[in-house]
Length: 88
Image (cartoon, rainbow, N blue to C red; front, side, top):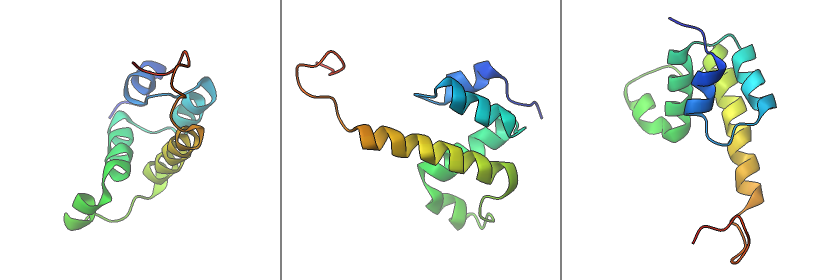
């Protein structure tokens, strides 16, 4: 199992700034652990239905980091119509 590299994080985590990328890499997690953390965030029901234990260790750290990233993007809200960041 290969440890995460910056390119791995940039490719898989949308809107990750440099600090978040460093935090994720700093966990020492593997590519597989990042994928598992993202699966927990996307929908935990199938994971629980597979009788998987709740996320712990590095996967739990990643879940915490990624959930903070999602909360930050939710707080920003949608772009105002007519702004340069609004999608037409």
